[in-house]
Structure formats: structure tokens, C-alpha cells
Amino acid sequence: MQAVIILLLILAVLVVIFTLQNHLEVSIQLFFWEIKDAPLVLVMIVCLVIGYLLASLVIYPKLWKSKRKLKTLVRFNEELKKLHDLDHPVNEKTKEITDPEGIELDDEDSSFFKD
Image 1 (cartoon, rainbow, N blue to C red):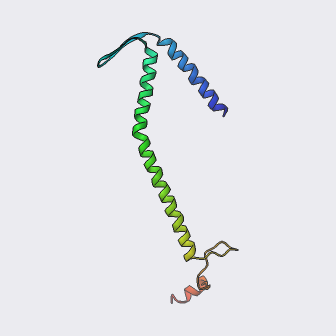
Image 2: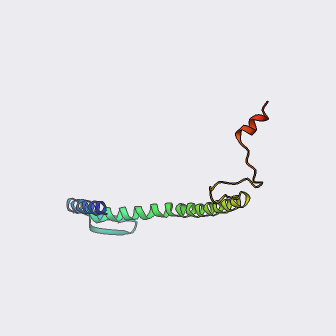
């Protein structure tokens, strides 16, 4: 938490320095509009915010789609686990899957048939 506060303070100091160094006034023309004597720092910050909003419009729908897909896959995985548990009962003491017939073969028995 303290690292976040220190990082925010450093960013605030950098913004103040940036503002003081870019106090020039510029004129902006866009189609029919003209803004005279706008501070350069304000123009740059507005452009930064507009760029962030445009990038968000592109990225967020993809994130929402992938989150929906993840939820369906998690739900499907849980259903598969339930089906697996129904097919293979679990021994409560050892937490191992037990054979439905209750018969376990040893390794020695399997070597008998290899001759």
C-alpha cells in the first residue's frame, strides 16, 4: 500500500513539472472550430484522455467476450467433475478413486500373465 502512495506522489510531481515546462499557449483548428490561446499542457492531457477512451472502446468488448467464455468453460468443467465423481466413487478415508467392483490387483499378479 505504501508503494502505491509513493508511486502516486512521484507521478503527481512529474505532472506538475510537465505542466510548468509546457505552459505555452497554442491555437487549435479542427474543421470549423478554432480554439485560440489554449495551454499546451491542457491540449496534451485532453489528447491523452481521448486516446485512452478510444483504446478502451476497442479493448473492453474483447475482454467482456473472453470473460463470458471463461465463465462458460468453468461451468462446463464443474459439470464434468460432477459427472466424473458419479462414474468413479471416491474412498472417503484415502481420497482415492475406488474400483467399482471393489477389486484391486497387485503388481505381482499382473507379472503372472506375462509369461
